[in-house]
Length: 139
Image 1: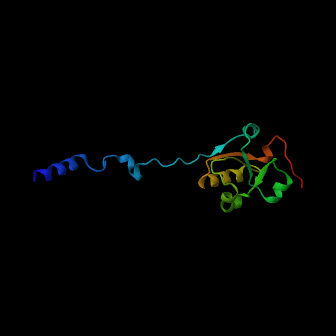
Image 2: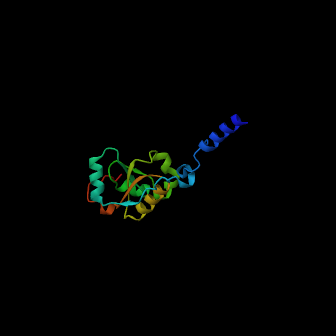
Image 3: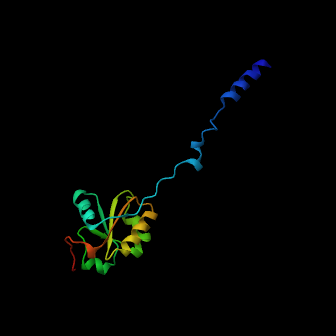
């Protein structure tokens, strides 16, 4: 009987798991941080474009507006198509994406939608009407 009690006593004292470690429970694990909305100036956007080669310029206006006037190397996803097309076109959710529209209203809304979809580096620089740099278009 002694030989049976000693192993039982040792097992009960050491235990097989650490039930006091609350950090292992899903309720206490830190949730991934949600990206924050970042509003920047056209000047800050231009500096980012000039300094980085991996910037995505996202125009969220209509196709007609895009053809008329846009910033070089922009891609178009109209604001009303963000939910349907963003993940297909913007595959890297960690890429730096600079968003613009005509006046800033649609870019703000589209930026919020992208953040809600899990994109991490969204920068809204407002409208092309405030862009003092070169544009292309007129097709």
